[in-house]
Image 1 (cartoon, helix red, strand yellow):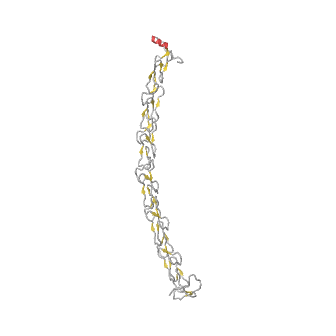
Image 2 (cartoon, helix red, strand yellow):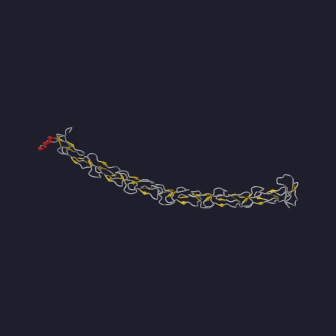
Image 3 (cartoon, helix red, strand yellow):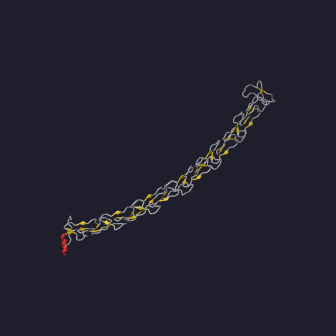
Length: 377
């Protein structure tokens, strides 16, 4: 016998159907079936009951409701069917009114599932209820499943690809100082890599050396005649005039000793002071020319000699010249002093010219003494 009831939304008074039939009632003319989503398990009732959340009935005239299976839910009363759990959710119990969001580190990409999947290696998910996981971005990695975050590549490593499970060591002569490098940088000029991998810093070139290009494996020693007194430099400096460097790798240039000098930049050795020039002490100064009335006997002098009495020195690089007749040459003289007529110089080494009559007296063997040179002569 069919189960009958008054239509769902009718408010008219009904008469109970025969007690032998469950759910029947009389609506002035007949008894009717319970609609989908409703049931009546007792006879002689005036209405049907809605299925509770988490259950349903898809047929008319039902005497009970069916519990939603795992992976499904019914979130309203009077449901005629259960719904699949949507992607990003799951349900592992029967008779549920909703689904559970997948936790962080998991996902679900299919409808009606009873569990979520762990995010695979190289991915992560930091939100709940997601249908997919996100690839680890460049500069990061994940080598475990079911993780909510990716890890930054450690210093000395890099990763340029998406979805990576590892990071790569920085190649030779390159470095990464901070975590999360997408690409390692070449060791900058002024540093070197020593052909090492996984560097977090590139060592600086020490004084006496340099590197001119990025990615250098070694620093280059300064060449002879050049120096570098600081670290982390890209070139060496030439030794200044007056200094020198005779070896590779100079940190400073040396001062030339007394009697020596350099005449050009980046000199590798000192040269003797030229004749007529001198330098007293070790220094970076040039040799100096002897002043008038002084001279040197050769190269490499540390001092100048005063031109002796009876000689004159017209330039400092020649030997003294004998004072000529009728002239006087005191010490330190650059040119002879001629005697004016009627005076003469009986001795080139004297400081005065004498009257001519004294010359006659000298010839006659008569000593007349010495007279001072007249004023104006």
